[in-house]
Length: 576
Image 1 (cartoon, rainbow, N blue to C red):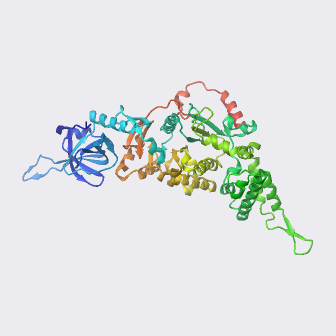
Image 2: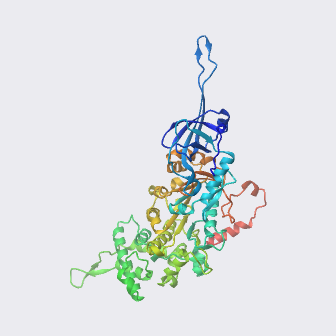
Image 3: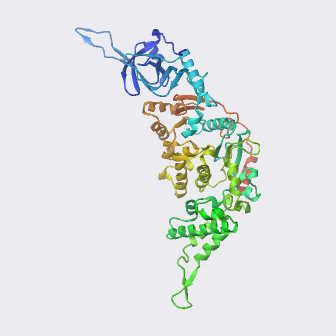
C-alpha cells in the first residue's frame, strides 16, 4: 500500500520552473506558505506513474507587486508572487519488484511543469520516516538517534557504506562530537567480531567499557619504570618499527649541511644491523628478502657503536704509515648527539626502553595480535582504545601514524581471503593530519601514511573515521576522500566553508544551519544516509570524559585546595 495519499486540498502549489536538481513551485495557498520551513521536506508528482519525488525546501519567498495606477484611480488588486525553491534528493517508488514503498537516492525523472507539490508533514511525514527507518534497519544497522523532523522515527545509517567510504565527524568544542563518537563505538562493540582502533589523544574515552572494548595506553615514564607489558594494557612502539624515512626525520637535522651523508649512512648501518640480528637469530627466510623498511629488530647499541666508529675513523694516508681523517670524520657528530638525547629522554621510554622483550623476534606477532585482533582471551574485544596522552606532542604525529602504518601494512600483506576489515577512528585528527602548508617534516610522514590509507584503504579493508573540531585545519585530501559527514555545530566561518564545499551543489544551503545546531544535534549527509538529515544524537550508555564544566555552579561550591599539591606531584612524576 502506497504511503502517500494526498488530496487536492493539500496541494501546496504547482511547479513553475525545473532544472537538473532544483524546482521552483508557485504557491497558491498563502496559509500553507506561512507554515513552510526551510530544510523541511516536500513531495512532488513525478512524470512517471507510481513514483513521487522527494525534495528539501531551500527557500521560501513572498513578493508583493507594486500597485499600478490605472487612469485617474489606483488598481487596488496588488499582484503577489509566492514561491518556494526545492532541491530534489530522491525518488519514492510505490513498488520496486516485490518490495513496496522503496526510497532511492536517485532521480529517475523530474517533475513536469504544473505538477502538484505537497508539503510533507503530519501522518505523511511519519509514514515516510518510518519507511526510511525500516529500509535502513534491514540487518544490523547503525543508528545515531532520532530525526529532528520526526522524533518518533529512528535515524538509521547504512553501516557498510559509513565505513566503506570513510567518514568525518566534526563540531566545535562542546557541540557533542565526543558523545557522537562514543555512540558509534558503543554500537560497534556490540557486533560479534568488530575490529577498530580508536586514537584517544587525551584519555577522554576511558569511561567506555564493555565486553567488546579493550583499553591500551602507550607506555609513560612510570610504566617504563614499573616494567609494565602489553598484558597490563601498556605497550611500547620500539624504534625499529619505524620506517627508514621516519627514523631519518627523527634523528637527522635537515638543516645540517651533512644531512644527506648522515641519511645515507643511517640507511646502510641500519640495514647491516638488521642483517646481523637475523643472522644471529637464524632467520634465514627473512634474511633473503628483507629491506631497510622491513619490521626487523636491531640493537641500538650496535648501531651507535658503528656510527661512533665512522665519525672518528682514520684511514691510511698517502705516505706509508701515515693516517688521515676518513671521509665522514666528524660529519656524524650532530646526528649522534641528537640520537643520544632521544635515547636518554624519559618521555620517549616507550620507544627506546622496552627492554629485551621488544627485541624478541616474536614481539611483533604479539603486538599485532593484541592491537589488530578482533578477539581477546575472553573471545570478544574488537574495539581497541589507545591512550596517547603521555606521548610528547613533538613526536605525536609520528607515533600515531606508526600505529596506522602497522595496521595498513598488516592488512596489505594479508591474503584477501583471510582479510578482516578494520576501522581507524582518528580523534583530534587536525593534530596529525594537518594541511600540507602547516606540516613539519615529521608531519609529512604522518600525512603520507594517512593519505595512502584514505586513497587505498578500501581495497584492503581499512576505513578512516576522521574526528576533529577544526575541519579547516584537517588535510584536504583526507576530507575529500570522506563520503559521509556527521557535522555538529560549527561556529567558525572557515570550518563551515569546508563542509559547504564538500556538499553537493543542490544542498550547499543545507550547511547554513551549522551554527544554529543545538548541542547533540548533527547534520548527517553522505552515502550512508538515505536522506540529508538533521538528527538529534542519542545518549551513549557510557559518556566520555569531555563534559563541559558548569563554571558558575562550581564557583559556588567549596574549592578542594588539596588538589593543587596533588597536581604538582603528578606533574613532576608525569603520572596520575
